[in-house]
Image 1 (tube, one colour):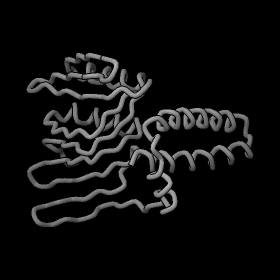
Image 2 (image 1 turned 60 degrees about the vertical axis):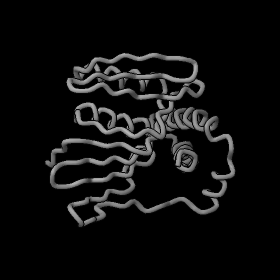
Image 3 (image 1 turned 120 degrees about the vertical axis):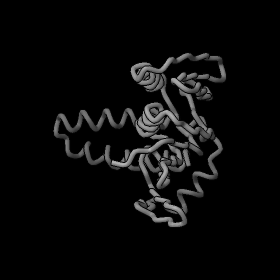
Image 4 (image 1 turned 30 degrees about the vertical axis):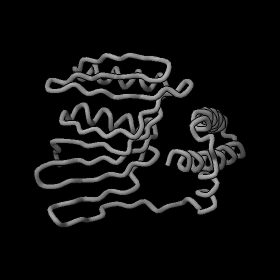
Length: 199
């Protein structure tokens, strides 16, 4: 298994609800970091103190959600970096993550919590290790660009996704095949809309 000395994050865009944010703070504390935060009407400043350095994550408050966005972070503490990586995936966020060691750099483009492209760079060599096929149509892209209410729509869309996942869970328990089919179709549509709005 390859070990890395440093992780860099750029183009970060992650929406956290309050329970997920609390879980991330608990994970930082469990890993042995000192955590402090200051919350105002507009922002939440989360300060994480490692043995060597203090890092501040600034989250913008949008209604009941918190958005970590357009931030670049270079983290030398791998435990801290991996916790942040885990929660970017868990919160279905977006980021470009560079995993760096002496021999190589691996660049992961994460969209909606999963890697869509992984590139390995060794010296002058650049190799695409993985690339996910695009399933979004041009009409969907144009429709998303025309939307001006994306910041308000995303939290609502998250609630719709949660509700539909709950409906799907109940349908699976009751073996309601018709509802399972309807829920899966709706979840696919909602997921594509989320991908377009958060892009």
